[in-house]
Image 1 (cartoon, rainbow, N blue to C red):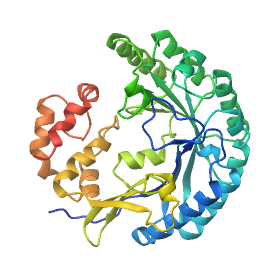
Image 2 (spheres, helix red, strand yellow):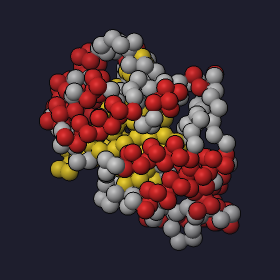
Image 3 (cartoon, rainbow, N blue to C red):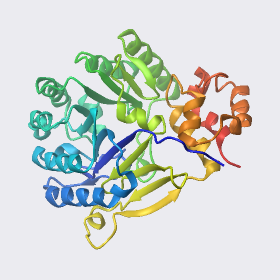
Length: 383
């Protein structure tokens, strides 16, 4: 029996599902525009209606952060994004220090909008660079080149974005250790407050899954990670989450809320939500209609599925998020966010600790646990 006494922070995720071109490694809900204009006016109208449909679930709760992801949200005009943000703000209270992030493509077309995005209230950009090397970008199917990526970061800084993220991948086809370090060195030359640096994985139902490229050997992947971690630490970046690095006080608030098992409302095609309901003592996940054409069909509900998280699944659900944080979280946070007493998982904790995956006084992975996180999480699966 769980007892939820306090609501966690609430974030808002907005999904814009169109890209100029679908990347072969991407398993997100994204759809190619084939260089045509996406239906931004109709889609923004649908997003506002989607929010209206969900207001009763979150009424009276302030929003701590907003993340506009995709797809490529920077394909939309600043005018469309402004209309959306204004509609949200008239319906929901914003935290005074709200973080509003927009994912942006480095392409020249999107760069021209950066200043306008800043003026309408976007205060953080996440720039999808992936690599600064043209041969790697071609292999990844990206539509920008290395010089465009560098120029995009310069434009973002000139537009006044003090807070921004550079998104990089490693373990790319034909990538050497020196290639990976070149990308990191180039990224750090712009002094980004935040860096996402994660390994390319081949996901099901992607072009790479059907026609898999040759990836670096395990020894090279390990060396890339080791040297990359050391390089970033030397340059003052805290490795605070499995694939996230930040300068002091520049962690991504929106993502931290996910990892700390906070609540989030998702609007847009294929968006997901996790909402705590104190009245019913439940934590419920909602999923929105995935196909953009169906999502824009006004005769249908935006929500296509909802399900309460069963009490016996809560420990794993919590750990899958919280144990991504390299500094871990407290036992108190586990109790507050799940409504479960820590002693209810004493056996699972003991198992993970005996295998050397977890520390004993805090919900924090050891170096071994970080390396074998999936094995660590097996201890918390319901039986």
